[in-house]
Length: 410
Image 1 (cartoon, helix red, strand yellow):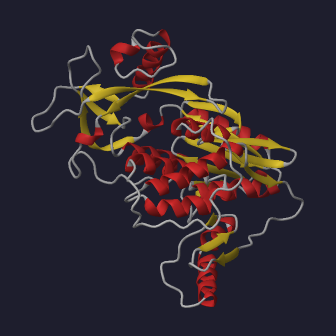
Image 2 (cartoon, helix red, strand yellow):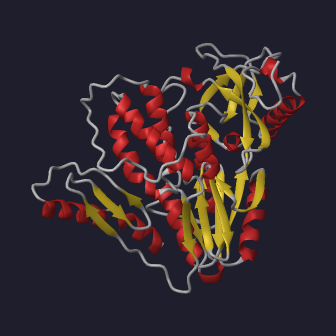
Image 3 (cartoon, rainbow, N blue to C red):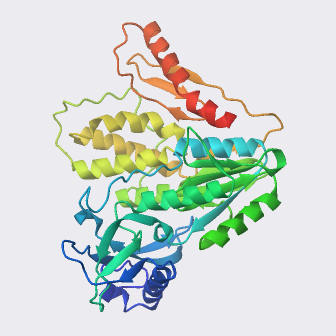
C-alpha cells in the first residue's frame, strides 16, 4: 500500500489510491486524444521498447500538493542511436536569458503570464519507426506515430512542432537565444520564452496576450496559469515595485534534504580567509552526496548572487571531497538557513533599460563579472600580475554581453 502523500513506485500500488488512478486515466486519455500510437503486429527485424508508469507529486511554491501526475514513459535507455533515433538536442531558454527577460519587462511595466502545454511531448511527430509495448493488460505491440515521454528524441520532436507552430503564428525566433520568440512592434509586440512545455508571455497590450493565448489553445491542450507566479522552482511576485524572484521553497527543500534545517544560522557564506586544498589529508566523505549538494546550491545561485563565489569555490573539490570541504558546504547551508527568503528585485523604471557591465578579480585570478547576466569564473590562464588579471577580467566581461546585446536589439 502507498499513502496519499507518497509517490508510488509501481502501477499496482497507484491503482489502490483514487487520485493516482485518476491521474493514470487522464494520461491514457491524453495519449488517445493525440493519436500517439496505432495497434499493429510487430514487423520482423524490429524490437519493442518497454513502457513504465512514473508518478510525481507536483507542489506549489508553498510545498502543498497541487497535482497528482502519472506519466507513461518509454524505456528510452534501450534505444539504439542510428536505428531508433538520430538527433536529440533541444534548445531552451537559458536562465540568464530568463532573468534578462524579466528585468527588461519590469522596467517597461509589462505583466508576465504563464501557460503550460499539457502532455507536450505527445504532440511531437516522429521521423523514425518506433514500436512500444502497451501498458499492463494489453498484449498487442503498438506502432508509435508521435513522441512519447522517455524516448530520446521526444524533446526534439516536440520543440520542432512548437517552433513551427509559433512561426506560423507570425513569431520570429531569436538568432542568439533559440528559446525566445517575438512578434509585432510597439503596442502589439509580444515576447514568448520557452522552456520545454512552459511558456512565459509578455507584452504591452493585455488584449494581444489574450489573443495569443486563444491561438495556442486552438493548437494544443493548454493550461492557462494566469500571471507568472512559479516557474522552474522560482517564486515570482509581480507588484508595484517591479518583479521579485526568490527560491525560498526550493532552499527549504535543499536544507531539509541535507538535514540542516534546524541548525543555527551564520552571517557569511564562507569563513573569513578560508583556504581549502585538493590534497587534503582529512577523511573522505560521500562524493555523491557532496556533488548533489553542490548541484542544488548551483541552481539556488540563479536568484542568489551572494552565494555565487562560495558555491564556485566549493565546486572545485567534487572529484575527491573531504571532511573540510563538506564543512564548507555545511557552513554555506547554515548561511542559507538565515537568508532563505533572499532573492532578486527587478525594479520598475520610467527610463529605457541599459546594459552595464562591471568586472574585478582577486589575487588568485578569480574573475567577478556582473551585468544582467552574472558569473564568477576562475580564469584559465595564470596572470603574472594583478594588472594582467584585471585585463583578463575585462576581456571576459566584454565577451559576455555580445549575445545579450543581440537579443536586446531584437
